[in-house]
Amino acid sequence: MDDVIISFDKVVKLYPNGVNALRGVSFKINRGEFVFLMGASGAGKSTMLKILLKEEDPSGGLAMVDGKNLKKVRGYKIPKYRRHIGTVFQDFRLLPKKTVFENVAFAMEITGASKRVIKHQVETALSLVGLSHKANELPAHLSGGEQQRVAVARALVNAPEIIIADEPTGNLDPENSEEIMHLLEEINRHGITVIVATHARKLAEDMGKRVIYLENGRLKEYEYEREDENGEQNTNLFLHD
Ligand code: ADP
Image (cartoon, rainbow, N blue to C red):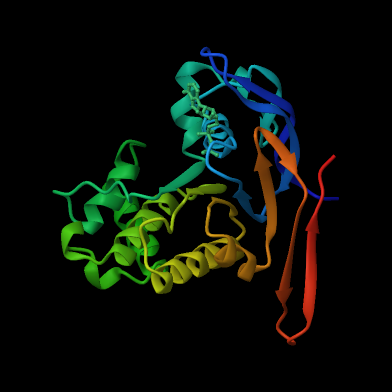
């Protein structure tokens, strides 16, 4: 049986200004899956991610993560809930006066972990993204691609079950974009569920993953052609009920 980690059941989001950002969205994501979230600007992608991060509550329907109804996660439990989800953003969001090591460690210090545990976890995360040798550099001394890898290490350091990347390649050149996508794929191979919101259609399709496609607050079917490892042309079609 598939192990569902995220499920949306007829989720509606009506903002106070009357904008209906999600109009009854239903889907499931299995533990360990890698999915892309796509759709034009204004389609509702950020709203969906904000619901997952418990920054917004649905106005209707049911959003569940790891068996929890998000509407019932109380205020004081939100920080703990969010630690199960690592986040990566388009603009990296590194602290400019802190070193690479400190940037990644900072995400752990608020959890009250011991110095020894923090050091070990940070070193492991930096090694996974291939940046152990830059641990003492300031972010400004790194390339954009390297800065995003630091952000990925920071997202990983608390051993999350889910990684959400919101337009992670938006500020990167094609080569670094591909590298970040492959890094996320490798992280996914360790069993972490990965959700990537992106406009980078070609980059996403080349990975051959499931696409959840939003249009004007609703899910739409999505189809793309992809050449597989044997050079055969395959059609990937994703339908929603
Ligand atoms: P996307 O991430 O796909 O660009 P969003 O979720 O940001 O889409 O936006 C979906 C719709 O909801 C848009 O019409 C947007 O203007 C509106 N919206 C987003 N956030 C808010 C908010 N906090 N208050 C009111 N309307 C919002």
